[in-house]
Each structure stands twice: as C-alpha cells, then as structure tokens.
Image (cartoon, rainbow, N blue to C red; front, top):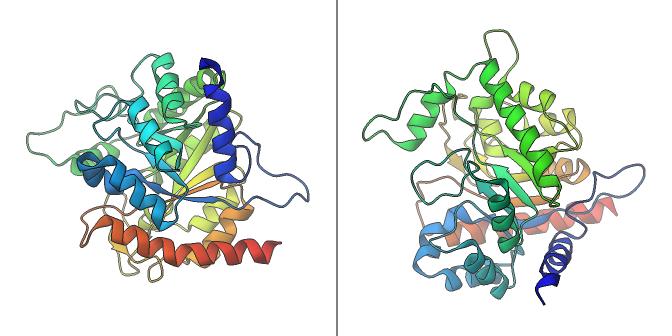
Length: 324
C-alpha cells in the first residue's frame, strides 16, 4: 500500500515534535508547544558511514527523538530513511547545499521533484539551504584550500544583490516545495551579519525579502554569537520566522567575526545563556532543536552529544513546566 507512506510520515513527524510540523506559529493565548530535541547528524557522520545502525541506535539510546541530516552517509535517501526509522527516530529536516560541490552532499541544483522525493524518502518536512548560494562570478576554490576558508572568502565578497538573489531563490523554491507540503528554510553562519556597503546586512535582506508564508529560518545560535549578535534579540525581533535552531555554544573570549571562525565551548559555559534562550525559543515558534558542534572534536562526538543532551533535557523540561 504505497499510498499511505506520506500520511504515515506526516503522522510520525507530528508525533515527534508534539504537533504538526506544518502548523503556523502560535497565536493568541494558545500555549506554544515545547520544541523537540534532536541531533544534526553531521556531528556523527564519520561513525554513521562506518556503522549506520549502531550510530543511530546510540543516538536514540541517549534520548534523542529526531535527527536532521546534512548528507546521506553513503546511503540512498530511502535506505537512510529506513535506518532512521528502524532506530525509532524521525528525520524532521535535511540540509542541502545550494549547488553541487563535487562530492556526495545533497544539493538544490536538481529538479524540484528530485528534492521532494529525497525529503519524502527521509520522512522530512523541511529542506534547509545549508549555506548561502555563491554568486555566479564567485572566484574558484584554490588548490588545497580548505572548504571553510573558501566559503569565508566568498562571504567577504557577497554584496546586497548577491543576498537578494538568495532571497529570490528561496522564494521560488518555497512556492514549488509548498505544493508537496515541504518547507524551505535557510541556515545562517556569521557572514550574513557582515555590514554591507549600502547599510544593513545580508541577514536583513534575507529576512525582509523572503515571503514568511514560503520561507522559514533555522538559527544557528553559535554562529549568531560568533558574529557578536544576541540570538534572543534576533528571535524576538522576527517573531515566527525562526522555526528550527542549532544548539551550540561559543567561548566568551572569542573575537567576533564574519569569516567562519568559531571557538566552541560547553553548552553550560559559554557566551550563550541556554536557560534564557530555551525560553525564548519556546515562546517564539521554534519547533525543532538540533544539538551540533563544529569540528575539530577533542573526544568521540557521541560522548559530546550525550553530555549536551543530559545538560539540555532538564532545562527544556523546566522551561515547559514553568510555562504550564
């Protein structure tokens, strides 16, 4: 019974996040639903490529309910989706690059129907542009240049028109994906907050020139802080626009920048007050939280995920209890 696959996926997603992933931001006196707590699988991709089932089982045993994927871990989307469900997890979101970068990372430079099929195979209700779309005239990557350094270099030459092209692309894709009940989102780094020559920032343009009915945002709180900005202020300044969030912290002593530099810190001891940010996330329509830490890792990423889960889960329960 081919059919019921989409209905089953929607029900699973709704169950995982405590309500429909397609629901509009809360209105009136309705109490906002508590966000789900998941993992950006990018953190454990190396382990997942070696032993997918064991890695996903470990994530579920820690206590997570959802995952967001940034690649297919050497699998087809269908096989990865099946493995995620075998572990008792739900894939609620998938990161895709703006263009094919020559590896096996999923990207948006494909027919829309292919994007829809990948999302459905995974069970995901959201596709997220993982990083800004490069300008057509962007300089090429130098031999042996690290990917992060290359992206930072491109970020430094993004002007207002380049950011507007990103907004236009998101609007067009959002309209096409909405017909299949899939949301398009945008994940920030810190280049989006760099001042532009004509005033404002790339993030200002993205938020202003995307249609709220078609395009949502995934706040990477660590990268917001790396840019010297306050995640809580950003959330409250744009109610309903940020529906997902990457959970990470950065060192208090880290120098603010717009060039993809970030110094990680434990969730409970960094520049971000996660007690306060969790409350702001819950009351400002964030429905999915994903723990993520950028490499390099000083220990097994699964150990980091367990420690962060054990710190965050009680805070989330307290936040939900205080709101009831």
